[in-house]
Amino acid sequence: MKMKKLLSAVLALLMIMSLAACGGQPGGDASKAPDGNAGDVANDPKVTLVYAEVNPEDTIVGQTGAEFKRLVEEKSGGSITIDFRPSGVLGSENDVLDAIIGGDDSIDMSRISAFALTSYGAKKSMLLSIPYTFENRAHWWAFANSDLAQEFLNEPQEIGLPLRGVFYGEEGFRHFFANKPINGLEDLKGMKIRVSNDPVMNGMVEGLGASPTVVAFGELYSALNTGVCDAAEQPIANYKSNAFPEVANNLILDGHTLGAIQVVITDTAWAKLTPAQQAVIMEAGKEVQKFNENLSQSAEDEVLQQLKDEGCNVVDVTDKKPWQDACAKVISDNTADQAELYQQLLDMKP
Image 1 (cartoon, rainbow, N blue to C red):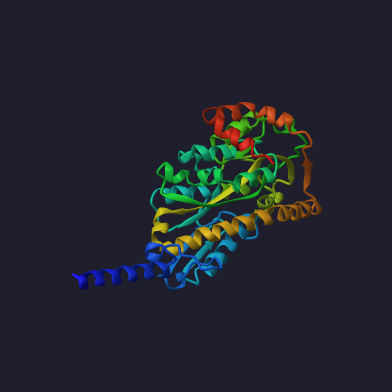
Image 2 (tube, rainbow, N blue to C red):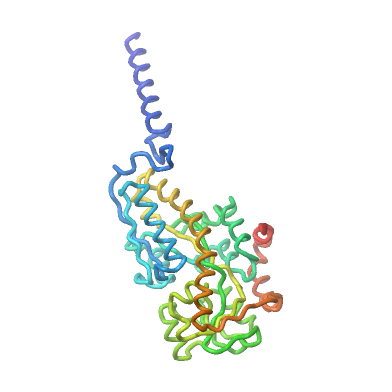
């Protein structure tokens, strides 16, 4: 009996020592070294994650994706490789989402518009696309860095989509640009404005007196050049990087919607990772979110000055109230069933 008690005590002591060596976590999952890097993650099985980005690498979102790649590969000690595919080589944002939600495992991660999951049943995400919700960048970042933002990122898991949010970012406010002069709200009336078949976007364009025209992003340059559509909307950096000034050299800074973004990873890809590798992904996400916050304003200011220097017809909107009033119906129609949550977003203004 004494021998059995002694053996039990020795086994218990060994178990405690084992847990301590793993940071107090059974199995050592997500253990962190003091410098923030995941413990022995470099020795974990090697895995490659394909990351889709529709815009070129020199855009704000392209640079954000490249920084995420750098951070993950560094923090994982090389056990995770991010195969970063910018410039839409894997298809449009909707094509990529359709593929990964449909079970295609050739793409593991994607940068998407924060409200792109609306058409897949994500109701919280839709609120991020409501025009004139965020007054400025500080308002957006007060939300993005809050606990409420984590609830929004977790929504895909809550509604059963096979992916999860990793981090938020932004690429600047979205503005209209056209192949003919636009000096004010009245000039949009009757224009065929490209949309991505999003219900809020359609309603906003109709409210502004224009005609929503669905065109794939990869076909937008040609559509503007041939008159299939007269105008579109993008953040400033994407407008320039995709060469749209060549065919639509008129930009009006109405700032109707913030270009909020998020990066998602599929459940299949998540399951490929060890707990320590999962911790690396999330830690890199936190750091690149801050990188994006620091990058966006300065990068946009630089691009806007370049556009002006190159002769782009840039018009500022000094009074946005008429624009907001024109969008009143689409705002109320799409926030009524989540009024309390939407008010929380509005109240986050610093």
